[in-house]
Image (tube, rainbow, N blue to C red; front, side):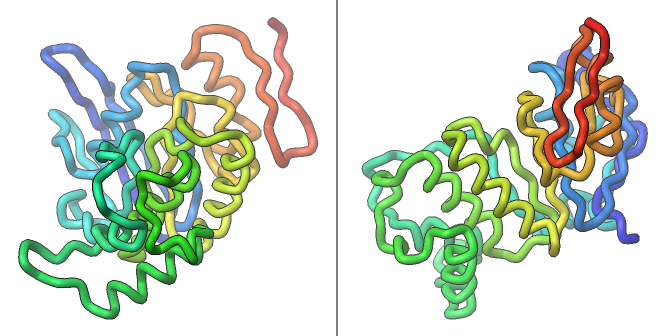
Length: 247
């Protein structure tokens, strides 16, 4: 099976403070991985090393056997916060097209527009191409930004806290969409919310500077206890039992 991401002995420091401590992780292609853990546990830092935004002091990261920088053209990214002016006169279609930016003074091709219309339909935003993004709801905005991440047809999709501004009903439909996308790409979801573990997620990585657990959802309870430092009860959606431990 093809491997999407390989991380070996990865360590990272911020001003002499260790944020990641010898992390080893392999992510198979066309799998859905949720990286969870407490705030300050290094989730976003790990994400940034996969994206090639920062270089680790120790260890290495490979994305489809390439360095993260060289693999950027096959990665799609949905950040936790997207800053924009609500009154800025840009519509849904033009926002998605920015995901296929070719450089200053270079115009978009018909292939770019065809791809944008295709992904807008896929995320359920077709028909709203001319709507100004400042008039969209939080859930609609997330779908537009997801379409922008998908417009290049990436092999790896990275999502950083994508449910932070989405209501529960929209969260369910968003996960249903991700369940379809994982049939053709690898998805890595970063979150601090254990509730993000859903029936669509294949594996969980429990991170708190060190990687305490990486494996199937239904075996994650022990790893989660080590990460959060307390006993817990984990409800595993889509699995016909609950994992219970003494409190």
